[in-house]
Image (cartoon, rainbow, N blue to C red; front, side, top):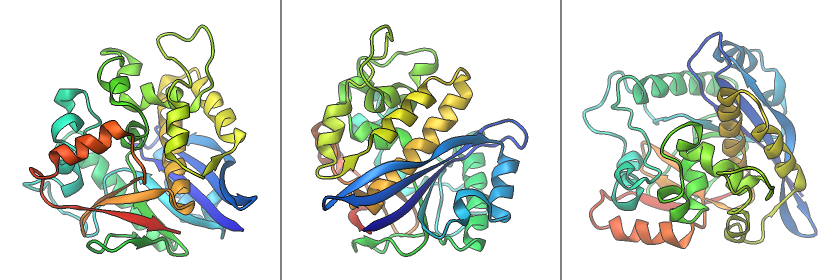
Length: 304
């Protein structure tokens, strides 16, 4: 059975520098179980090249088997024309308790931040407009209803949150470096989850979170091609290219989880995050601990 292709896009700003990336995963069935594997190597490219790829209907997006495109950028159902007075509901929900930056958690950036969140939002919405013209509409939430992925759709992801929810909290809050490239949550967690344990790679304990992450995926299987591609990305000499490539890789992996029935959606009618369906117990408890104090948002299943 063919579950289709999942495409992840890491959104960058520069028109000329290589600050964007695109990855493609495939979901298929083997022995009655969903298998996630890499369909194409992850590509890093400029924002201008990404736009041209979408507009010209070239590359992976021209493949009729692509069902879900995920963007690593804040999106809303209705485009905002100015910085809002209040942040988006999912951003606020994951800014409380142990999710907060003050507790070294995976708190999202807010679109209310003029020099970071807002420009990324504007860029994300521009890419969404191009994708909608190419036949990939935004898939929004409808209250507490479970989401059904249609033939083609676009959803928002946050790679650092996807990875964090699959890992024990201490890996972020205690052992993560406070300076340098590995200070960023996704840079730190990527090799812990997707790379194989290897000697001589301090301070990263490569693959140390893999077993727990795979257990949370349940019956979904991950093909060796995923780990081969992750090692290739982790070996890139340019830190900026490594960061962009890993962002697209995680975005595509999260989209593939959705096509394999291993995802949930957290948000409201205006904005959401596509996330793993099952979370590490540390984060499940953190969610429960902050539920009463937070504005009510939904956490619903996603079906392919």
